[in-house]
Amino acid sequence: MDSLSRIPVEVRQVILELIPNLRDLQAAILASRSLYLAYDTSRRLIRQRVFRFQILRDYLPANNEAAIFTRAHRQIETLEKKNSKNDDGIILRESLWPLLISTICRSEERKRLLEILVNWSLDYAKAYRASSSSREDAARYIEAQVMQLFFSAESSRTTTTRNFYAHEGRRVIVSWVRTTMTSAVQHQHYEYAAVLYGQICDGWGNNIICHQTMAGLLTVPLSLCSIIDGHSLVAKRFRGTIISKSWSLFWRSRSTSRHAGDMLCYHCLDGAKSLLAATGLTHVGTEETLSSIEKIWNEMSPRSPAASFWADLVVESHHRLQETNRLGGVLKVWNRLREVIPSDPTQFETVDLDWARKLILELRKLEKRGKTQEVQSLEFHASVLALLSPGSPAYYAFARNLADSYVRNGDVKSALTLRQQIWQDLQPTSRIYVSWARELAVLYRRNGREEEAMQLTTGMKETGRGGNVNIAV
Image (cartoon, rainbow, N blue to C red; front, side):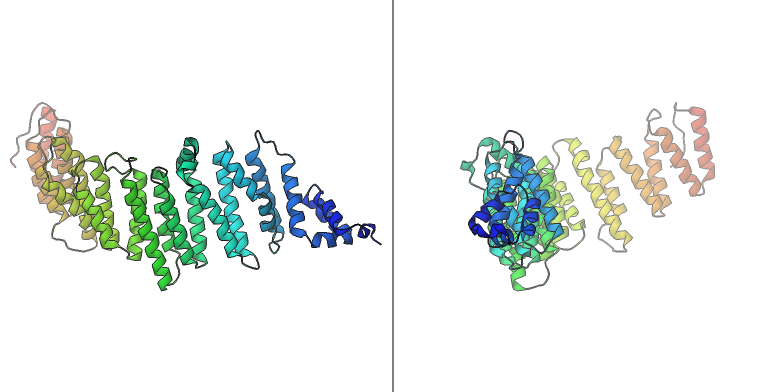
């Protein structure tokens, strides 16, 4: 007979709670039926207390706060892999979750603990949803706790903590948002996901969110739209909500002082482009979005640094929202530049020429596909060359590219004419004088004018760089 059976069950449970680790606990209940029966009536509490003692016994408050939860996380994952059917993932996390929440609020290891919190909360909520009873409410409660920690009132934070959540923790926070939203969508909990995302966008104060964090959040709708299955009214309403909330977050950030004037940093620009792609996929508020972007851009000086960022959004909005090529947007930017004479001649070469190159590239793409346009790439290229100041490096570069384009299109005669015109005006001391003459000689030969080609190359050898070669154009 088991001598422990004479001991009250409450005492046997206390004995089990004092065992130093889960392995010894398992050995004890397998060795004694009396201990097993006591364990079976209070399994959750006993396992939690043994696990908590096992993890905390080597705890050094001065320097080991993050290590304790990392160690616990690894052990829980190991137990879950050994037996995925039991609820150890829930039971053991419950024992340390309150301690993790309280520790992260006061610890100096905030960055590391935040990463641990994100991993814990994601696995904790996943374990609840995967349990036999599918405890969705408990999973949402965990997510609400994390939300409260991320987006608590500004007045409750110190400056150091506020800066941490705004900058250092942005990557893990956005990761948590993306994974949590993805899980809700995969379970088709669209109404909950819409409320959750709305709270995220509304709860993030303007003076807390940074450019990188906002840009990360703006990429979430596109990833969600790509996994939404079905065209139910609830799913469509959800897509509309996250698109609307994301644009509200983007426009709200514009009113803060984080961007000088109307500047957009590259982070915000990339985030907005991703949001435009999601808007185009869902067809939600496309006209309003396009109108808002163009209105802001039209209020700016077209060659200002801020306008260059917004001009990229104009092009992207035409491409994504109107489901057309990028030509319409680029052409709109070019026409706007033509309406305003640059105050500084160098602005034309630094700003206008960049958009001219983009426009030429888009025209060439369409021409390769066999699509005809009102404006041809070569015709436009020649019109831009006429706007440049003869003799400038940009003028020669554009002329060389135009001549090469003529040749690629089989129009050697036009290339020859252009090369001749430019070369006749070149000074022998020019850096490009010799190279231009060589290219001109090549075109003479391709056009069957071997004598003139020989005359040109012979003249170059005789005169070196000392004088021009007299050839009729």
